[in-house]
Length: 246
Image (tube, rainbow, N blue to C red):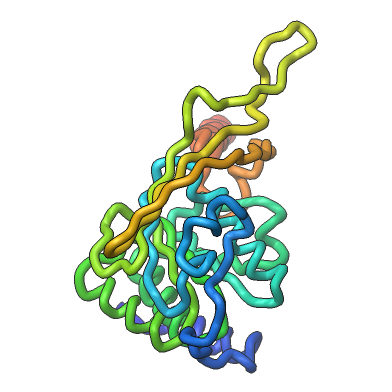
């Protein structure tokens, strides 16, 4: 595969962030998530810099990591989300944290490596492209060299210095009700998070507000259309074109 996408990303980093230099993670504070209950169980009260953290996504991971990205930016640092599957959308990503949508898995891994190594980001989140074997080695080395915190959403935990898993407690759903008393929208859930590493493990629970999103965000360019609308419109256009040709 051509190295052009990675080179383009490298030039973009140099142009937009000329002050991006690797930081010494030994002297920098961990990257806080902005959720006191979670930061309270993490070593150093946040994601360790220069290290790989693995989050096994079983529910709530995106919301928590989104909070971590926002917190990093609010603290005057930079955060970037590598969205390989094209599932992230919303106004939140138009300001603050950077959203990077690679075209394929290989570009995602190479892009994440470049973002980690440049040292310009306090937090790099990799979603939708699970690194394995030598890929994990390269990414871990890049995180160590750049000094930023690296969190990947995957069930493969090899070489991770921190392992995290989360799940939504089913009995915790709090609903907004209609005037007729029927449940309409979920307003809040409780999340159970477990974190562990060599020689220790902790867990916590906390409330997580649920933010409703406009369904038409599924049609944002580059985002996966989960409702099949694009396919439907393509079919309608094809039928319309056939009618005109007849």
